[in-house]
Length: 195
Image (cartoon, rainbow, N blue to C red; front, side, top):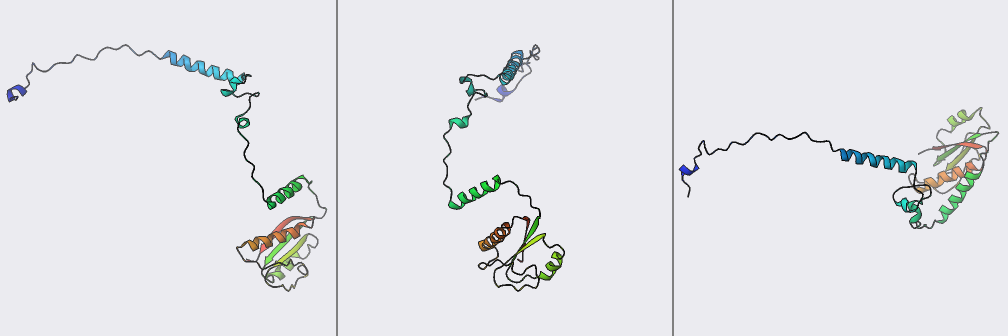
C-alpha cells in the first residue's frame, strides 16, 4: 500500500512539456480543384454534344435514346362504365363541334323550387323590356306552381320530388340544364335555387 509520502509530488516530479511544434502552412488541395473542374467541363461537353450510342443512354439522355417509360410495361387499362363511355363520346363530340355564334344570344334562367316561386312578381319586373334575350325554365318538385307572370307560364319541367342535399337535387339540376341546352340560342346559364 502506498503511503502519504509516496503520493506527495515534488517540484522535480513535474515534467515540463515542450512548446508547440512548428508546422508548415497547409498546402491547398490543388488536386481536388482540378478534379472538380475536369468533371464540370466533362458534363458541359456531354450536355452540348450528347452521345449517339445506345450504351451511353444509361448515363446521358439524347434524342436517339428511348426514355425509361418506353422500357416499362404499359399501364393496365381499366374498364370504363357505360356512363363514362357515353360521357367521353359526348365530350369528344362537343369539343369537335365548332363554336356556334348565335344571332340572338340569350341567357337561360333555370329556377329550382319546391312549388311556386316566392319572388315571381319581382322577376316579372326584372324581365320586362328584355323579351327575346332570355329563356325561363322552372323545376317545381312538390306541387304544380300557379304562375302570375307571363314569363313563367308553360315553362315547367316536371319530375319526381327533390330532397335538398340529396342526389335527386343534382338530377333536377341536370334536367334543367338539359332542357336549356336544347335551345341553341342559350349562351349563358343561371341556376337559381329556392333552397
